[in-house]
Length: 268
Image (cartoon, rainbow, N blue to C red; front, side, top):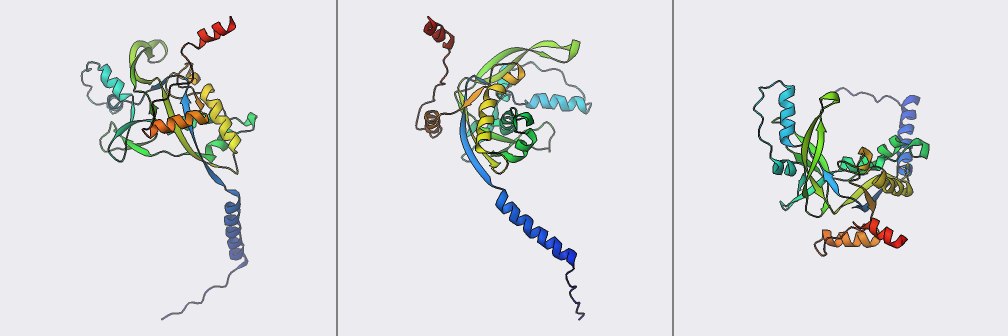
């Protein structure tokens, strides 16, 4: 049996070990992760637009230069159903969801270095908790997992819009059928590095983004007025928690459809 002598530690080894210990100590002291949970309540209806399996399949066939089949007749009911994001609970119940990435992008929209809140810093220090839901893909054998948060609210309604498809002079008019939620809310649960961004920053970004950006199709960021929201008050949060637990009715939105009329009457 050959016995090998252990090499004595060099100054370089001792220096590396010291740096490792000091780094671990630094991280344990400086990296403080907190969790925040709050409800965002819709100020205006939310329009969902998930990619339909048919649209993805047509895109794939075009890119792989497959034989193009005859164009099938449109099915508005199917297009409406395909625009929804679906989640399956542990008991097998299907519920509606919404992309967590859209929520994060929205919260990041007001962040800017000129405000003392650099976007990159917030993006790296913020994480939204959401289950990854596997959705169907165009190519058999491929997978696609989307982080979705649960969407609460009224039953979705079919929405019809005039849209233009294409680019430049080749744009053509078409009809789009998508799902719209008149009343909606999402419970956002996130983790963030409190040593980098404060509670006030999280609250400010979440509040400002609800109006400046919004979520879903035809939102304020895209020239529309849909998908705007606000942070729930204590009363609104309690009402939505009861609804989510099946112990209360669907909370009605705080805004009024006759807001302009009420304002005019008050002005008189």
